[in-house]
Image: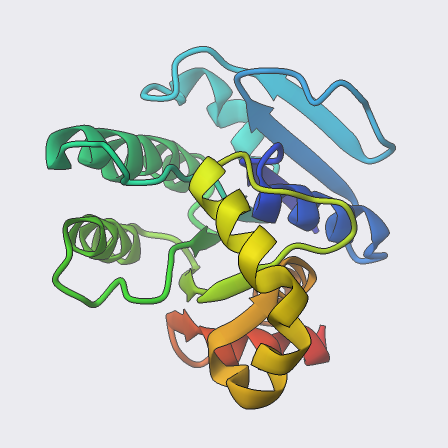
Length: 219
């Protein structure tokens, strides 16, 4: 597989990159970002792109990819609905439309969040984003809804609120995993689920936390 990866400097994206590089079925990873990762592992081509609302110039590169892992996201904290919509819905759809135009045989995997079917502002925006992605002419598209994600293998969130949550809940993860396995996962399990979805698909487009954990075991 050849994978396009967005959000490689974030927690989930960094883990997706690590697992993709270790996966023998992954031939190449096209990392799209605004700033350099600072390293160039084998199998990786890094493309720095300034305008994240216009990806038309990258469509020839997208045409070579079999799957996209879209792990780019922002916190809704302190943002208006309009601002959050622009950075979540509009930005994501700008990339996805160019990807679908370049290669409709592609599998698109979007890392959303548990609770995206709720009534909070962030959930409404996420749900609109998911629905719009599912309407695009991809071969297949999957909306991953992880709940609490335990970071592993040195990856970390760049969001202060998330880092505070990890500092509090991280030491309790073994207990949470035992008592509430449906509501916790790890960055490695999310990454492995992405690889499994890209390689073999899944019967349902909405992939909940328990589905992520199940897929990770099969990757």
